[in-house]
Length: 583
Image (cartoon, rainbow, N blue to C red; front, side, top):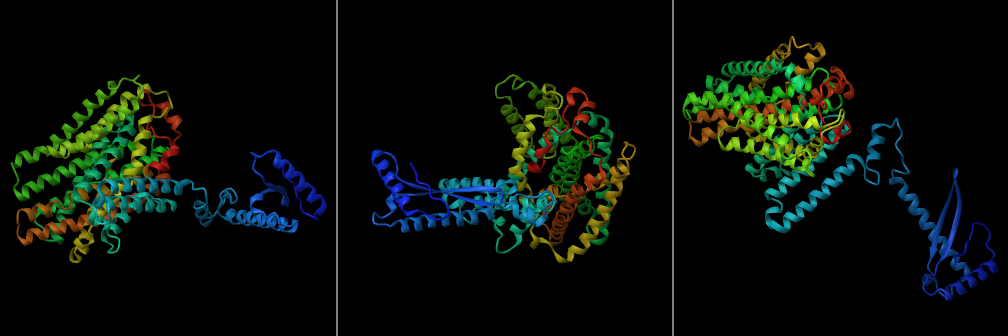
């Protein structure tokens, strides 16, 4: 039994009688805790707030007077009031966000408790990464400490996630923050932990991330749109790449005094578009319904992979000619052979994925993920081991596309593909790794001041010609003027290929102990590759993200799915509410 003391005058005699009753009751119930509970009914606004304060008799002296008892109760009441008053400033419940809140109000609300939204996801990732790091430290000891490879990777991952979240708050693509953070972690003296990342780890993780994004792209390709736009895909993949490479070769020969072989090699380095930048931005727009009525995401995503194969093949041919590596005829035909090998691999393994695992398997999503993910890893790393690097991207994209053709037949109209959710979750981890590591490849110390201005001129000439050719490459495909402009802007970003092959010519020249003049050409190629990444990747990503909703037509996904046949029910297979999490 508890005694009730209300606000107002206190009758001392009644209070003493009540305490006597409580003492008698407590003696008869030895197993029950003794307490005095004071119910404080205070009117606050329109609500009647009741504060219940328990006073443990063990903390009250037997000689304590009733006045001391009231003072103790008052102090407890004061503590509760202070606690409530202090916490209400940090609680989302006490500080709801209004519909027309300003940016400052939304920013303040984001950091209220309990953690929620982007902040909650960031905190979760930090905790998970901390557990992983402590585990690595327990197993590997000094290798996971500052100065080690694992510590540098974990630091880069966490900081790139935070940078991406901050940039996303101002309605810019998160990859922009991740890319800039990677550059800072490599070049800022105090925090340059990225220098401790071992090159083979960086290369492997970037390739794994590319497998994930290309698999997501393959799952999202619309087969009907791809069939209708197949000729447009070839034109968009070949025309801008070849013309830009030729223009860069001429301008570098005239401005940088490069030999023609080196100029053409530089042209192919510059000309390659970056699927790592283009695909996430296109998938984000596709998931929101932009451009899917005319298959624009499918057109650009499919063409980007072919563009990369063409650029890498052209670079390899010119590298072989420049340094006379192997049989020239074999080097020339190797590019087309790589493309064919990649497509054949993807088709064969994709058809196998229709039947293995069986559609009624209890854990078919898990095993399909194993087939898709490790099949992509196999063609990516296996092609490099066989010196057929160009087969990797096309093989990975084709595998996911062909596999999805069979998996879609099991879906009901409007049902999304579970595999897209799995790949989306993987992308949340590997997106900051990919762009952070690409940024970490940019070493400002390799940028020669004498080359910067002339290199910018070469880049500007090539990029201008590329945009013009891209605009006309999709003529006659039924696109309006705004859609032509968007496709042109989407064909701008460059990062992945430049980070991968930008230093190969310089490394080869040093390995062969070439003359200082040849090594200087290699440094110029690397410098311009760095400039290409720093300029086109962020500008291109912002251009796609900002211009997409303004230049493309938004189509309801349900309407689009009704217009296509059953095998192509889901165009992107990712729920719209997952767009912010995956891209």
